[in-house]
Length: 466
Image (cartoon, rainbow, N blue to C red):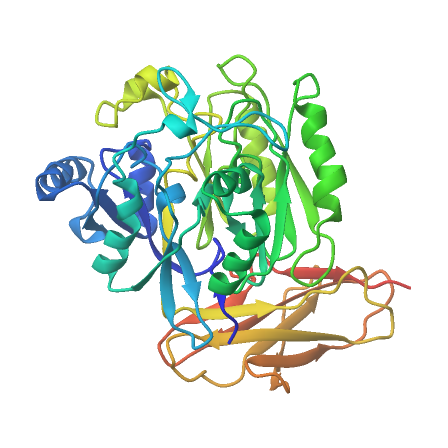
């Protein structure tokens, strides 16, 4: 097995959010319908208060699990200080806790710029005096979940560490700045990350906004192990060309875990109520087979939902506004965020974090780069790992069809020479044909998974060339 971090879209058993809420209560209700909510509270008394509110909102008690967690000034951001999920070479699940001693620093655009802490008045990071509570929270979560915990000595802020579940991590430069501030040079940081996580293909993009957190999750998001979604700013925005240059000169030259260029998917944004600020639609949460998208009460919201649906066929796309006047029980954000609780740099993804399945059935399938030649079969390989330790229920199945047809042809895959890898061929088709396919596997634990996870509603597709 390969040591690796878990990608956002892999099987999850729940979602973490903090109480008092930093999300609209309608989103919490929706989370509880779709999965188990792990509600992070400061103590049992707060948990009792939350239970009363949840009951009034119609949330069933068995849909919520309470975790008592130290709460610092950034407690609403479990994405940033929260634990990263890791499988080791033996298939054992761990939670990795980042160093979060300096809160989340802000910086300007540039390759060697100072770091600041935001507050009533910004001040240099060297003057930061925090209570350290958020730095303790990840371990408290791991202990209550009964999962082995690994504390790392470097900043590994979740909103600025996105991965593909194979071998690739994407961040922006501010994360390197913070680790340099801690006395960790770039190369030492990359080596430590590779040793602990098993992920060695690390891409760092330039920061993209003046005096901002500059976290990558407000600009971009891996959609799977081949594609990265990136916001496209309005052309009259002062950072429009900067973002385009990052895409053209940096991301387009970065390679994914297979040594191929990332496929870049663009998502158009537009201005929100704050001068010069744009809607951070990339800061959405992919959780199992649903994408939860922040909305800003602007016309561009409808476009964002449509583009998310086009990017993620087969997924359910749900949008959520956050009007503070309609959220009397939320954390008091009015002095920070005016009347909308979503900020350009602090949004839905920042305030939610999956609880991944430690015994998941992992299924990943190959895809061709470019077209497949006419008259040639395409060999599909699939990595299938039952982390529960349960045996597979028969061989994984490769299902394929000519696009537009109703019926799928199913082929039993055979073991490859490499452990955990299975293979089967899609026969040759004619030039110009579009072929759809997916892989399905099940194990004795009762888990059944596909690649892609939303198959057959969403599936892989390739075109047959000349």
